[in-house]
Image (cartoon, rainbow, N blue to C red; front, side, top):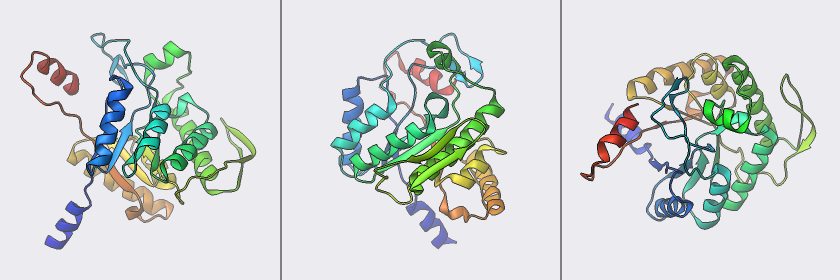
Length: 266
């Protein structure tokens, strides 16, 4: 038992997930700090404006509807060029924002620039006010998940195969190349989300990694469900890395601390 505990503890790795509401120079400085000081990874969210929702379905009118948000793939490209060791990734790219073939090209380019340190984190998409503002369709949840599964099939094929032909309900490719390929083979696809019936099945089928929000108890339960999906699709559950996000603020004693704490608890 002690040996297993030691193995689990030595497998725990820590990354940073900086807020893109800061000037891009500060975000890049934090990523470079992580690179220089032994952090495992640095992740960037994929949004174009602040969320006015406290959850995917709950509007929060106290939240600011405007403010700086540096675009995900542009920032990751810059980080790839000025770091040496830290793993870089999107956490997670919204599938509704871009055609999956374009996402595969972007991911391949960043993996080349970074020398094989990029992870494509992909999710179904959710932020309603963002879609409304930019005129991007946000389909129903069932359609969104169906699109997401097709997207995972497409990017997986573009990473792994010489050419991709695909005829789906939402996307179509004809003898599509993806050159240059990513440095990493296989290239790591992280599936983001905690939906137990569909999203975790998609992770088991196409993902190399999986990430969601959750307490240790939530992660344990969902991890067991992911294991079941892996068994049904014939994969070893140990092939899929698991990670969770944890938000915190440091109390500097100023008046804004209570405000920041309430924002995290929302």
